Amino acid sequence: MSPVRRTQGPAIPVFLYHAVTDDPPEWIAEFTVTPKEFAAHLDAVVDSGRTPVTISALAAHLAGRAPLPARPVLLTFDDGFADLPGPTAETLARRGLPATAYLTTGAITPGGRSLLPPAPMMTLAEAKPLEESGMEIGSHTVTHAQLDTLTARRLRRELLDSKAALEDTLGHAVPHLAYPHGYNSPRVRATAARAGYETAAAVRHALSSDRDERYRIARLIVRRGHTVADVEAWLAGCGARTAPYRDRPKTVAWRWYRRGRAALRGPEFAG
Image (cartoon, rainbow, N blue to C red; front, side, top):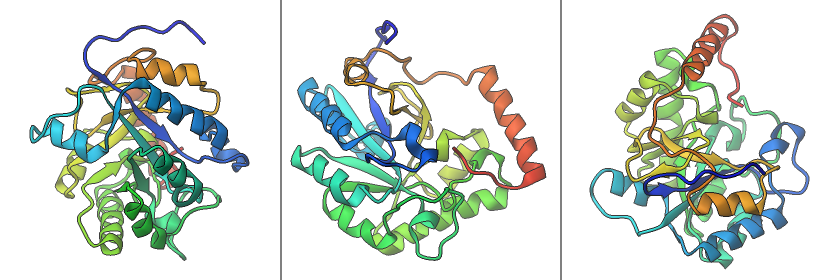
């Protein structure tokens, strides 16, 4: 592992997990950790002395409604893989750790439409029991498209339809969103706010902070090659830059390239 660099300011690690399994489909394997590795990561979280909170707690702080604990940490999960409402939720519950799950409604609804490649997924009917087990639920759009390449109409539908499906299932408002693969833009962020979301999580592979932007909260994407030492470094506020910061020119150029490609090919999988 390369030497870590200590960040300045009140860094907040927000971990982004996908599947937790020993046998993932190849397309998601890079973003999968084994159950043994996951348990070791959670033990590191417990040993760090940080206080686990949900996105709602961070949202309340960023909006000026409530303070955060002195050293918070957040655990988030994207997509809604089949392990989430079973062994993964159980592993979290055994340690008393809250988390936030962002669900791709088209991938977990029987007969639904999604751009996610085939994989074992949870079902929309499991969202309510998952919430009752202590996990906060947020939206991860309907199809998992690259949101910053969509037309205004398609973008609204991705944000509103996924929100409505989850709210109908859970019986309450769903105010939190995660952009598929972190792809966003000023237009996407403004549309998310108009759609009624209070926060939106990006990726950025960076530490968040108590000064982060509500509509692109930075997260640390956990890959299969990351070790417990990496997790411990992030928990110590090291090993990654701290948000907020401006997009690099390379990021902006990549967005424009993808937008041009989508104009020719149509909406594409964000991954």
